[in-house]
Image (cartoon, rainbow, N blue to C red; front, side):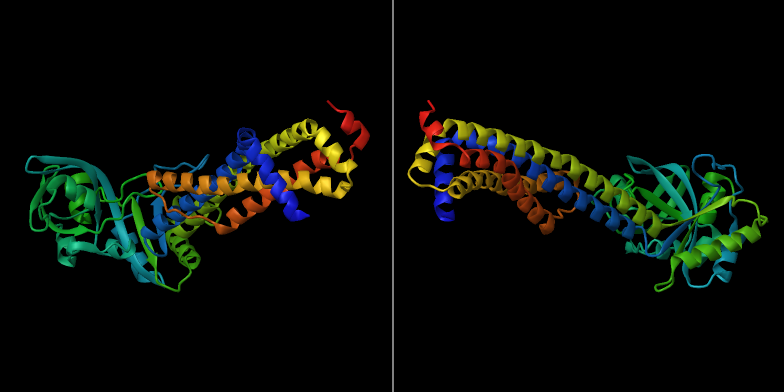
Length: 401
């Protein structure tokens, strides 16, 4: 009986091909939108996680001041070299402590120039950020102590200034400083915050403080914990030590901020996941609209085929057979829309992922759920028209014009 109902359903769809195509369009849009939104969301989440990992392993950022609504204190006292030395000597489980002084500069080589960011730091920066040189070398301790005019170029800055030329061993002018290029960095690409991490020039901290910023202030400290050490414990130790060094009382708020990259990554990942779920739910409304469309068309089909139904009932067809016939038609319509919708959604997600430069992360579970849900839509919205057809009075149906 089921095979016969399936054969009749396919024949009916072929006989009314345009109407069937328009009927399943709502299911196609709904399933396709859900698949596309969830896949794109998964790709965005994967990109956020990868970008955070590129910033360095077990990384913490320390900055003077508290930031946020009602907490801004950007005028808080900056860090100094003694704070760096204290963190390096008194913290347990720390792999690297890197001071950072940053400023906007113009770099010039020959006829090429580039507005970029200079980061004044020392050799610990590359360790903390897990960022090895692609060519050349890092800073020597003597270069950092003596404030030598040496620099390491990020990939974007290197391309802008040197193109296909070899940068290591050349000289560039950073503002008014003639700087020896001792190395270049491996490309890290754009971060999830939208900035280009490769558009940077590293220089010894003392050189930047003396000749670019004109101040001994250190505005940021990057701390990298050793593998196997919980960053939460390191964060607590940093906060305790800095409170002591900055003379903050027991009931006073910190005048500095310590941010754990893992917490930031988890927050951003959770936010992306929530947005993905919301977008998927909104897209799922299209499935409801598609189901209503199937019910409407099936009701029209029942009305059009009243005499056919009457004849079938009059020659001995049972109500269950008529019910199965129309229910199978509705399910075939919705499943057809589900299959096409899955293919469409994956195709749209692939194109969007390519354009947005995020990983293509299809989820087989979501595709399966969408397929099952499309079948459920056919059963739910096809049941009422099918029951109406099955309960027709054969005599009244035969009289129908």
